[in-house]
Length: 57
Length: 143
Image: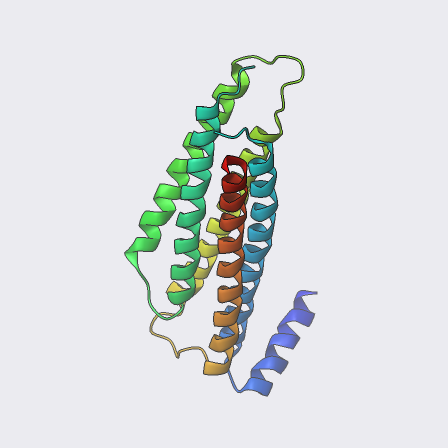
């Protein structure tokens, strides 16, 4: 799996004319943002539950 | 267990503060792919502190004792929401580390930056929507 990943980084590096390091950084940044978005969606669900279940003040 | 209105108000206020802080953290972490800012670290510290306070408050409410029929869902939802915010803060920290490791290196290509920027905009929009959902439901209850 790791070898495949390294190979894909190299392919992308050649295709985009960027260094492998840049491709890795962009991939990691995109993953972090994706994780963030998933947490944000879950946060929305939990906040909705919280708001629906709490008494009016 | 007597779940008091002020308990919920406190949890609600802390969740809102945490959401706002993480909104700042994500925005700044994404921006810091271009430049780094101390405000990120300040937001991160404040977030940890709020999370600790929220956990303590939830424990206090639960430890008061339980009466039959008491609805613990809001407490659990609050704790879960808090954990999600922490997960987002962690992702923002990861972004910061990438940004830091790239300092002094060749900037990311414009096309790739544009995609990352759009992703961060979408993420921020989801956080804002989550905050608004919470706010609007609260407003509907009051109204």
